[in-house]
Amino acid sequence: MKRAFGLLLNIPFLLLVVACGGDDDGAASTTPSPAATTALRTPSPSPTQAPTPSPLPDTPSPTTHPGPAGDPLGFPIDPSARLGLVTGEVGARVIQWGAGPPAFEYTRDSQPSGDPDEANRSGWNCDVHVEYEGRPAVDWYIPTGTPIFATMEGTATLFAVTVVNAFDSYGVDREPYLGNPDRRRASIRPFPGLSGGLGVYVEIDSGEFLTVSAHLELAQTAGALPAGVFYAGYSPQSDYSTMFGAIPNSRAGTPIAQWHVRRGDLIGYSGDAGYSEAPHLHYTIQRAGSDTLLCPTTESGFQDGGWLLK
Image 1 (spheres, rainbow, N blue to C red):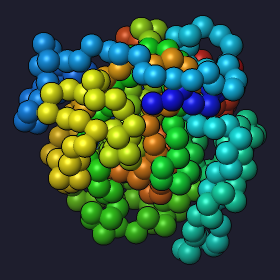
Image 2: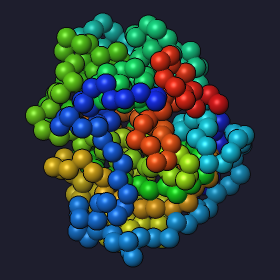
Image 3: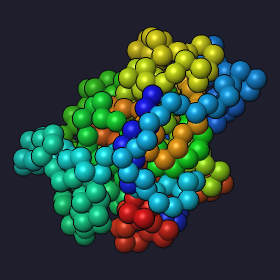
Image 4: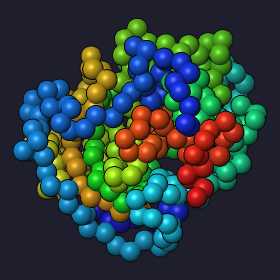
């Protein structure tokens, strides 16, 4: 794998509900450690089977974001990439890919906006995540297969809950949830069962912070990793569509691989798995040892925020 483009709330749960990154049983999704998920699948890793985190081959990135290596600074996507844009009237909205603003400008100017339509025209901001999930996060609408990067140095772990999309699996219309949700039709609990939550995600632990990049494309992400970083029973060539081709009865993710990353390293590719109203990246930050998620943008009402722009 190449080291690619260098990148660049402290509030209580308001609702025991979940949306794009959560599940429908009233509990927010959490990111388990490998040891916490050893009973989920067979074969599954035991502590003695866990691979030793290994650095991946890389090349110098064109830019380097300054700051402590273990702090989540900058963007997990190319900040100059144009996002998808929600267009059309409510009831007939669609996403026009590449028609939105660059990710950096959108995150700086639109997501903190007091206008909910403006703030969510190219993804969900922290306020909508709190309303639908109970915890802050940010989303960017990007096509499946978009490269995702580490925002800090640490140990990366690839997890899988499911590779299927909950809206498609349950036959639920996605349109009410695009951009600023249509509250008349966008139920907080749209599915009769669990949603698959984050779908496929990479957690990075720097010892100081944890970041999660979610709704990834599993086969493409796994295919970009060297064979030596996988847990027992998994490889770049594994049949992930069979292994994770249903929404399980558990919200916990199964660890697939673990390796060492530096800020700017490629960690995977975006997808549309789990509770995902459209292909996008769901991104969260929290301090190690805390269950409180921090708002990555500069939206008002959130303490310890603005990490994407630091």
